[in-house]
Amino acid sequence: MFIRLLIHFKEVRLMVEMQEKQKKRHHQEDLQRLQSFRPIDDTFMRCLFRNDVPLAEMVLRIITGKNDLQLVSCETQADLKRVTGARSILLDAYGTDSTGKKYDIEVQRADIGADPHRARYHSSMMDIENLDAGQDFSKLPDTYVIFITENDVMQAGHPIYHIDRIVKETGKNFNDEAHIIYVNAQIQDETALGKLMHDFFCVNADNMKYSILAERVRYFKETKKGVVDMSSVMEELIEEGREKGEKEGIVKGREMEKAEERKRFNRMIESLIENKVSDVQIMKSTGVTPEELDEIKKKKGFLVI
Image (tube, rainbow, N blue to C red):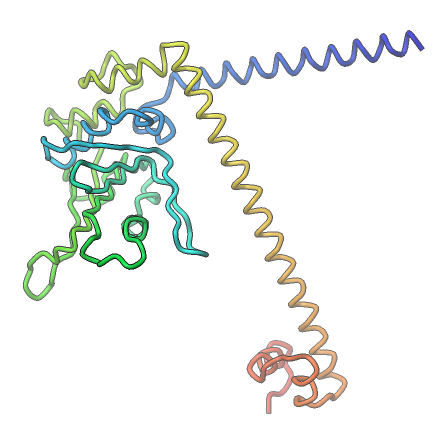
């Protein structure tokens, strides 16, 4: 009995040691990955903007050209969904200035992530988020959806693209105050915007031109607390991905169940048809519509009268 307990104790201790080694290895891998991050990487960008209004304010001033812009709040991973059944979105950075204008800043490395339809959806969700029941439509705030893209999505060679609705027949602005901006991070010239895009591609803070961004990068990469904070964020993102995968798996499973139920239902209808049961009786006993019955007959090669 004593020998079995001793063996069990050794096995447990060995398992704990292996788990500790694995944990340390994962931590070292996270640290190595952290050192390679750049502000253009959305995970890192969210960390840089988190609880740092001055940094977000500087970026917005440069992109919008409004040097007097005063940001009063900025949250990362803002979840917008106020319509039941509608797709929710997580905004990389969501800010409000002193005049009530709203800003959504998105970093997109892949062109597909900056699809115009996505920009349109972000803009519409910001409208829904900022107008309560009973409020007049004129109370909608000005909104800015800003995509900072690694490549020149518009492929026209400009450093920045401003998208606003216009009236085709007159050429005048529609003045709905819903703005979309695409920033081409490929152009890294000596303009204020070009210097900012240069910094967005820097791995090393020492190579950055804007000190406020460089100091934020140093905090996450070079201080113990910053590294811990960044590691915590990475763990949150991994957990979010796991939960999303589980939810998608559940939805997919339910869809497969429904599809299987439909197949069984169709096979039952086919059996009734083969046994010369009348259409009226089939519809009465199963609840199938005339259109659905015709569709089943067509798929199986039965004559539709």
